[in-house]
Image (cartoon, rainbow, N blue to C red; front, side, top):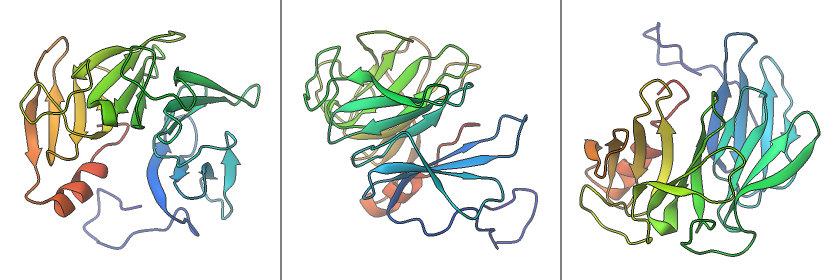
Length: 226
């Protein structure tokens, strides 16, 4: 953790013994101490660190090759499983895990399918799920309890491209829940795209000069506070 109001480049360790982390989510709603959730890609799970805790607690059961993670207002945890082409929801109240997007081990580009989903975002007000559907080169929007998603950005047919209406392997997504502007990390195109509400094309707001530098910039740019 690095404090924004200090000039020091020295950070504070908030989670240790983290092996192959693929994503981090910090839940700080102002009503409690911040809680850190980490998706562990090779360990097939999500670990939780409560503020000040030295030990992690696994939440949500198995999340195979886990990459995306998000938490809603009820502290339910959402996890994406790219190798199983689905997004899971773990209920803190019932301690059960359910599939809320995609079909288990069945990839495709139909409205009820995903293909290697990675980054996810949950609208904490309405429960709408946004999924960076990487191999379909699109961002899918799933309303709460919906059986099908709709394409919010990119190609509804799963076609890759490098123009303003397309993506090539989008890996992360976040949504400004006041303006509903969408931000997408477009990995192979080495850029961050911004999509206004109801837009059919995005605009580039950041561009990487190489695959390596872009991947580092794009993966780490998103947080709950945008």
